[in-house]
Image (cartoon, rainbow, N blue to C red):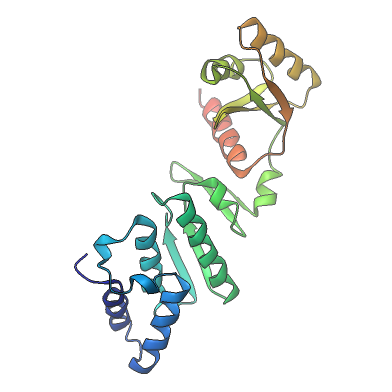
Length: 222
């Protein structure tokens, strides 16, 4: 916190024994690459969360690693900085850097070439985003209706429903591949006083597959 942006990068360059002649052009490139050039003399403690993450990435890259491990790099970062951070990661991929990322944001995980889904310290599945989405059992429905929390409680106990979760202002429901289940859901919601605003079948996201998998595992232990 007591060091400036440029001092932090130089400190890591010393740790990794980066050659003095190579250092200056490399640091200038990293500053430009991460959009930190205007802040090179600012104290690290005065940077925003997004800029601190970029600084950490610049420090990690100063010795040109072939493999990079990032632990929740966008945690607590605003959406604009998060998008900018991923742009930098894509640029690194083009340069041949292999990147391992741990993240709780499964929408971000979908940007990776391969994903390993973990729950309570155990690996559930590994594959490309498309492979993982293809493992969804049953059908996925997106429902919009008033009082979504109470509506979800009703739906998750309905026969034929595998799992039901809240996604923003909508409910995602995984059901058995049975045409009668949609009518049963509509009837249950109306009888419970929850007139659905819309109900449609949608393709699953990685997060949908993760929640459905965890829900089924939890039910198997009940």
